[in-house]
Length: 150
Image (cartoon, rainbow, N blue to C red; front, top):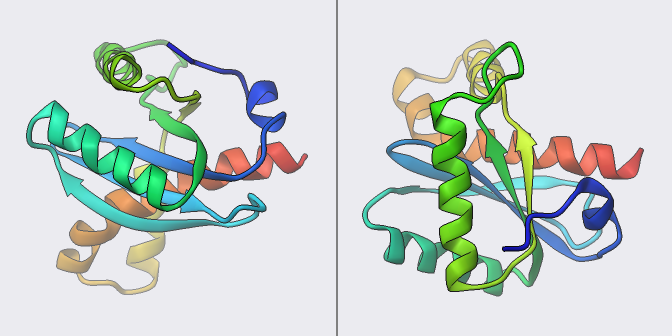
């Protein structure tokens, strides 16, 4: 498995794929090749692992990505909760299919921040539900991009 550090990620170039893994959906986002801006791409409903992984790999390849950032749902006190192990297992399973560099990134409050921004922008509940996961993936990925620049 290729779980890497932020320093390892900084040593490479190219677009990154961000994933906000939920229990029912995956939010997906990509960066530009210069790693300045994260853009939401899509939300996929979780079905079975293999077709979900294939959609992730397709997006990774089509956008010429060089690494994956996966949001890690830490507890508010910084400890690992039961969902953290589930996300790590998902990453191991991805790497068993294809060896790709994966960086975990603390995603605490990403969905809450995105939802708050959407409420402030007066988006309807239906629009929020449709977009929140891919926007959370972009929020997580943008956090990594900002950190890489500093």
